[in-house]
Length: 203
Length: 203
Image (cartoon, rainbow over all chains, first blue to last red; front, side, top):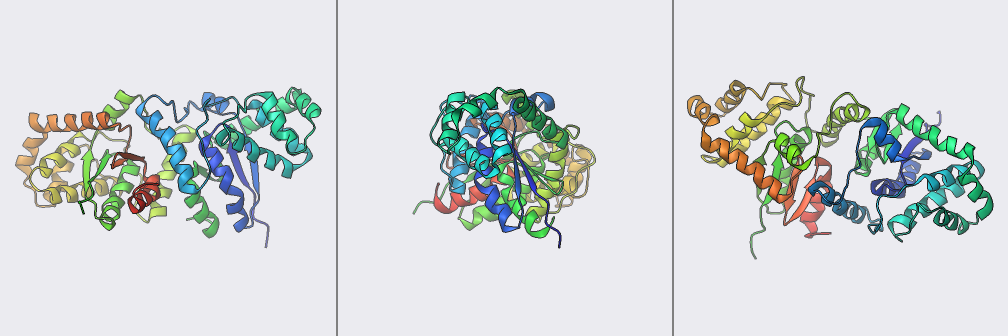
């Protein structure tokens, strides 16, 4: 029996539903013997290329609903959540740090990703700041200097750009966006459909 | 013990997720002793007023995904679905007929609403046409002539306009949009959260 293919999980660190998916997808995939490849990307680039838009502006009736739904969806899933006071935030530093870490220790990169989401959506920290990113990594035992240098390195900048281009080429238009065996699932609210898909190999 | 308040269910007859919600909401509400007030509205008016947009254009990566998700979500819920060949369609005739019928026999109006959704999302009929609306109603025993007159009556036109204005005033921005005890649920994918809300009186 061949190993089932990995699941691709595309997200922006500033995406509330991306955070909810991040808190659930590894355990779900593991139940079905699947690995998950995490791909932090920049929604600004995705929205610009696809003409899509962020879900919440906080002012319109839809925007107010979305802010409410972020927190209610977290409660529904049993995940801690506090609406960040600054939202959304640019996430290129967090994403670049992720890819640099991933090249050295992919398990540590995964722990870092969870810690970034937690810093933003539970502790209300400014994850756009390089210092915050470096502090989060330092708490996981990562040396500050080489990571600070990596955040400005052409190679890491190119890696993030390349991931965004790969996302667009794959048809990603938002966060979270999960692709399994060519099947796309957009949004944390597709977790039940993703689960049934993994269970049944399609439905 | 007081009777629990009714649930308000806002939808457009051309909305695939509105159809999925329509197929489930009455049975769900009944389990918790709730009535549902159905309100067909015109999404064109809602989108114009709120600046919101339809989910699917069929061309972009997001649009293609949405068309795929309509059908997959229907399969997930066990509801028959066939993507209409003409989509979306204007639905003022179906909505006007609904309100006219509702003023005479609310149970018949409910059967009519299900039949309109079925005609569009299973039988691929052109529900924008007055003739189709009259035929659907005739199969439920409704006389053609008075309904044909009602579709053009100032009173019924005003009723539909008023329902759209009430929807906007209530904060409705799309379809399906459900309000229970002041709590808003947008989208058929919020059925599990709606169920938990009804079970627990909030979460």
